Length: 63
Image (tube, rainbow, N blue to C red; front, top):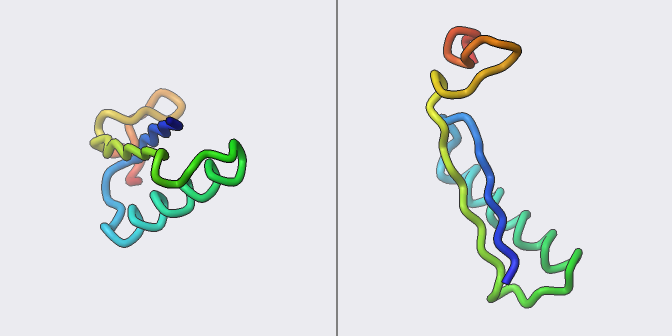
């Protein structure tokens, strides 16, 4: 059972997350010939203050 974990900075819409789940699922189906029903995708929203870029939080960078 393929399982994809995706970490993203918070703020994506539900529609965007649906699109990520759909496209990642399809990519795994095509890449490893997994049955679609066996693919799992987990999106973890990370608070901007917990995401660092070049030593600075995404929040402080205005992302």
